[in-house]
Length: 309
Image (tube, rainbow, N blue to C red; front, side, top):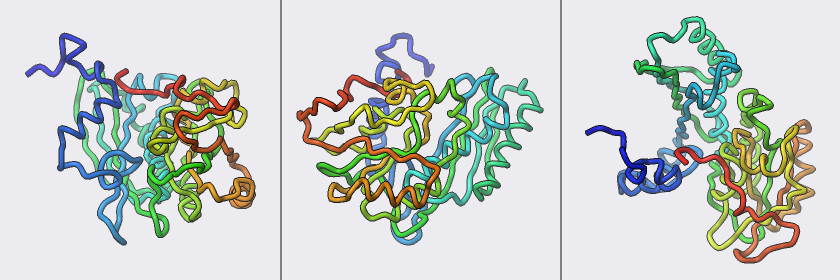
């Protein structure tokens, strides 16, 4: 059976990424546990209990995640850092990685050496042993997929679930303009920050901002609520505007929610004591669906990055 459709209506592009993931869940049925023990969060958690492990996977693909302007060393580092950001979003720490390469036979040796040296330098920096992998051949392809294993850094794992009415919404760092600024490969995964946030009992849920704030915030939003976000509170990177900050993606910052009873100013002071060089912004809070403050953004007007769109 040829895997490529002749009509768009028969293709994955017709569904788009979000609907395709829902279809995959249906196809898998009870073979796929609910999140966080299966698909649906930054990492899968297995098994339950004291021996919990975190598992995540992300690729880098030529002409999609990097181009000729990005040095091979930076591509190797980006591959690991993308996965480390997922571990950070669960409040975990990495323990090992495996890597699968798909290469055109014409792939330059000096490029591949640079890729591995960049990967190795990043792995040493974050204490991640590269413990295995695989190589396959495919024409006109240079791609690598890394599976990263981790474990909780403390007594709990933060997931995307847990926010409630009037809970506060925070984000680390700055957003937008990731591609033009080079941030998409220069970023530092927020491992220490994620582990610290997991230890703060007032923090309810968390995700890393990889597909844009507008899209990723939906994963933290409880049913029946909507995020009331003041545009003046969104931290912009460089030349970014609000639309870029909400939609560009590849920011790799931490977006998290905090219990409504918590004083956001007091929490911000505690944050500055722990991470004086990392900006923290309170974007707003969750309100009942249908309510609207005159200063809040209409988030439904913005969309993050979606594969296969």
